[in-house]
Picture 1: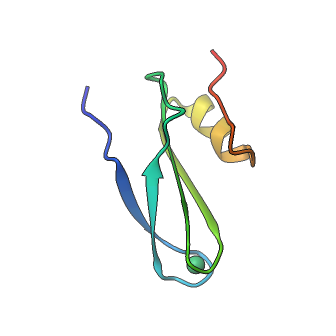
Picture 2 (picture 1 turned 135 degrees about the vertical axis):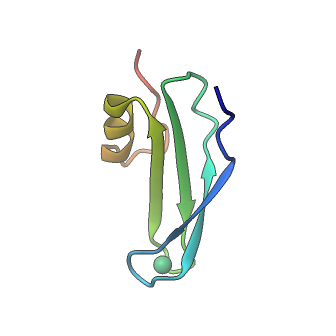
Length: 70
Ligand SMILES: [Zn+2]
C-alpha cells in the first residue's frame, strides 16, 4: 500500500485561492486518510480517500474530533 501524501492542495470553492489540506492524525486505521485545512478566507476544506462509507462519514461530520468507528 502506498503511503498517503501528507499535504494536498485544492482550490477554494469560495475565493478560488489554493488551499493546503493536511493529513489528519485521527487516521490510525487503514480505512481512511482524512485531510483537513483552512483557507485564508476562513473556509474549511475537507478531503478524504479510502473506504467510501468512512469517507462519507468524515465529510458529513463537522466535528474536529471525528474518529472512524469500526
Ligand atoms: Zn478561500
